Length: 343
Image (cartoon, rainbow, N blue to C red; front, top):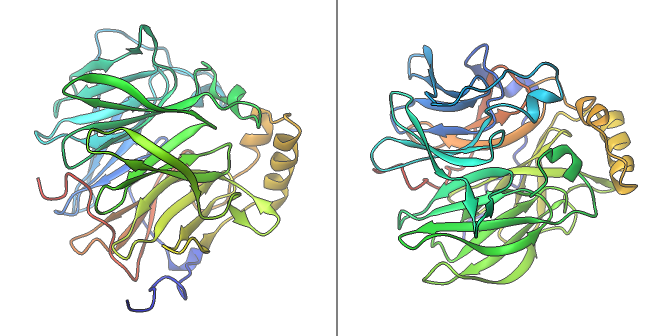
């Protein structure tokens, strides 16, 4: 195999370009081959950014109305909060709503219905991310069963799980994760990689033909971040070489874990003093919304995801929780196409 193209690759703020404007919480970004982007938006819907750079917001149409948040902390815990998204084959969007705790499906015109709001007769919990695989199954992550997710930012809470929706319905396939966040399947869909945000690591499990998961293990470092400076992973994605790219939210770092499990920093926009204060408090089980909100860099605070797009899948877009536009840069290696890429 040729030398890994990311080993000598780093990005600085001066290497970045930007697209989009006045976005609100563009946490998850989906790209299509025509160059268009679709970004989750806290106003309750998705912003479609067209190849020419123009944009429009497609607001979800609900039967129920939601009140707007009144302060910074509430913006991340209340009301409708489209989070992870996945395209269906017919152009609809599956949306994991981090505010209303349901998995939704939104039609191209914005009409939105609830797909799942419970599992095993209980509320589904804090729905974070949804991923469609090549068999049209949906992999769903639930970060915590605690309503206010900020209270789950604790080293003592591990009540997150992974669920699978197929022709048999929705079922839990793995449980006991420390704030389950994004998940990705490798190129052959043999393993699923699971972000544990408060576990500060990425786990992986073997995927059986029927979707059953087994052989849980940590992939890469047991604690992510630069030496002595642990961080909280959020989003992940694969490139075509097999590197697993990811973000550290709040400490605003983009990293990659090589197929051999080695950790490589690609972009660092960390406010180190604020991040260290949060990490110390977290270890003592004393993390607060105020300490979390004090963190974040200058590019697009609270890096949340990396999405590969462009016709050659070499444009890397950065999703964020507090940014208002989308930074992007050119990668030396193409991303692994998502299930919708050739629909």
